[in-house]
Image: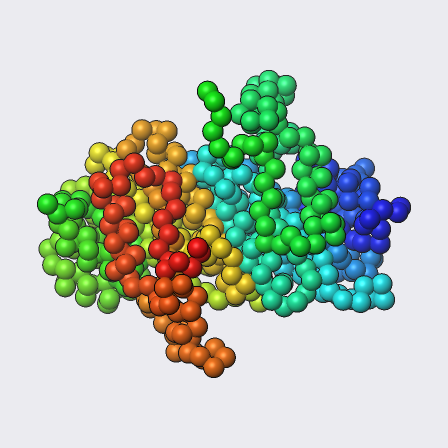
Amino acid sequence: MSGELSGQVAIVTGGASGIGAASAALLAGQGARVIVADLQDARDGAGRFVSHDVASEESWKSLLADVLESEGRLDIVVNNAGISGGVGNAETTTVENWQHVQAINSEGVFLGCKYAIQGMKQTGPDKPASKGSIVNISSIAGLIGSAGPTAYTASKGAVRLLSKSVALYCAEQKYNIRCNSVHPGGVDTPIFNPLWQAMGHEQGKAFLGSRHPIGRMAEPVDLGEVVLWLASDRSNFVTGAEIVADGGLTSGLMKR
Amino acid sequence: MPRLENKVVLLSGGASGIGAETARLVVREGGKAVLADRDEAKGRALAAELGDAALFVALDVTQEAGWQSAVAASVERFGGLHGLLNAAGVGVRNSIEDCTLAEYRRVNDINSLGTFLGCKTAIPALKQSGGGSIVNISSVLGLRGASYAMAYCASKGAVRTLTKNVALHCAQMKYNIRCNSVHPGYIDTPMIAPRLGQTVGNRSGRQDLEELHPLGRLGRPEEVANMILFLLSDESTFSTGSEFVCDGGLTA
């Protein structure tokens, strides 16, 4: 398929659903060959499905080996896989819950960046120099304190700063690899399944939507477009940045 | 009137650096200081220097049971708990390419899990004492990235948002407990001592770090301790969930 990402290879973690699935579809729509890396089966998705656990370094090693062997290059990594980890607050969160959430949301993104760089540094006949774009999905919970459970909030704050460190390191090394964090507000994805079950999908969406100045929750494609822009050369001067896509939620106060 | 009269403050990392300097200030201002640290020798020596108003407890901040003992010891010895300073931390230099998963986890466990456990364990005791103030030491590297301190940046970014989450939880529950983060620049403490003697280009490590700060020098532990004192005291009762920067202009 032709498009502005024609010839490029992308990995999207958590690509089976939500923001990941929307991103995979949009990247593929621009001609990228997409690897949908997920624990959850996604054989009907926008790319080639590879079973992958972001918290496991072994899984990252075999994923990268697989991609380099079959595709010969790596250009885009979207570190999207994440969990909310339930509803624990500052008093009820257990050490086990904390560690589980950090393993997926924080360590998973750390490993994703580390192996992304390894892959993006690989050169070949059609890619003479290292180059790439890493997109890390943080959250408005990485910006404010009220947007999630305690362990989730900490993990997304870690992703926010980790992304800047990676961006600066790659710039310093002259790798031509950019790294940015994305901070979505409420998005209609399976991360809210417990709420949908409690309130019903439409009522739940209306409830969360009313908290966003723009009056609605995001659809996954709204975030997929942000990911596509960050992945493409259209954002060539953007690195170490926090891209907030939250319908105005963290902007400030409205008349009430 | 002393600014912390009869307030009991538990300080992780209380045996050295910013923690130790704050403990001195707590005692000078009429409070009680519980020094919680892994370094028993230093901690006991400082507790002895500070006299009856201080107590040392051994603490590995990554262990929840250790935190529970430290909080219990504070309440038993001094009758309550009014302040918590999470100052224990490790400063490690690594990049995204050379940091191992084990090292990433170690740094995050001490700096971020350790701070979470401090908050979690102290909240019930602070509540029982009528409320109080939690101060978490993040860093300028919780506000800005650094190419050479990837895991540290991640851990301090976690502390930054964790602090806001704790602050809002306590506000919502009407506990009268505040929680703020402090973001020091490079402070002349044991954490950065190894770097000061190194050579960076044609300069010493100290000069190199000094030049990062528009004020042209490193911070002194007592300068950060003064900010912490304000946050621990009743002078700051409308501040919660906020970021207090003490960095000689570095992030300006």
